[in-house]
Length: 152
Image (cartoon, helix red, strand yellow):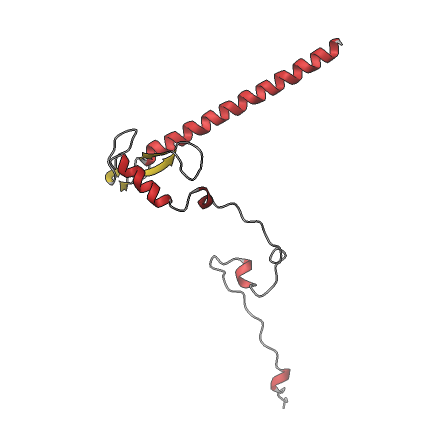
């Protein structure tokens, strides 16, 4: 007859592996210290800091001044539209878009999302064109300096 081991000597059965169901390794070992947990990571600058504290008041004043219509295409606020991409019906809401720099009293323009996206796209294209032109001038200047130095 076998003698039973006391409770302290009984070993627990091996845990069987269960499906993770979308959980990551970090979820299952939350008690362990991961290498990056002790390191303070620098936070990205919040976009909210770009806006003044009374942003909502300024945005509403801008939209009131525009008569609650897009200043580019004259589309009214809360107009029902159908998305070309998804086919869903949505209410178009006006955006108060910056037309200048981010300051305490920015220049604002009431725009629909389409016109706002177009304005931002044009601004990015203009910046890219200016950057390319600056690079060309820098390269041209270095080539000229080299050619002058070679003649000397």
